[in-house]
Length: 118
Image (cartoon, rainbow, N blue to C red):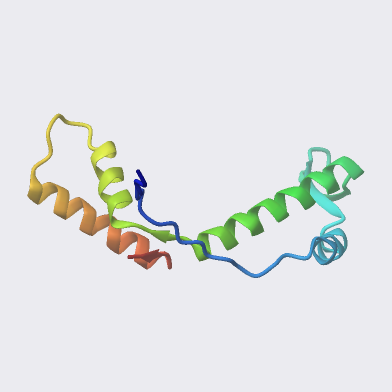
């Protein structure tokens, strides 16, 4: 018995590779200081970052860059959009017209922000 079960398909999008060395080189020289409020002079003052703060800023910038590239490669599927609308609906029951209206709203909103929908 040779049974073949299909669970759908998987699409994989690959973005531009990120050079960690290049990222570190750019961000280490980019912002070696941070702004803090000086209560004595009642103004903003540039204060050198500690090594820990520099490391934290470097990792955060890399995380945001990676997430942005993931979002650029991602496509929102219609079933996920409909499911999201249904999960966000607070009241009991959802009419077909309301579902279509809300899916249309989110579809326009997502496209306006530059994301892809199938």
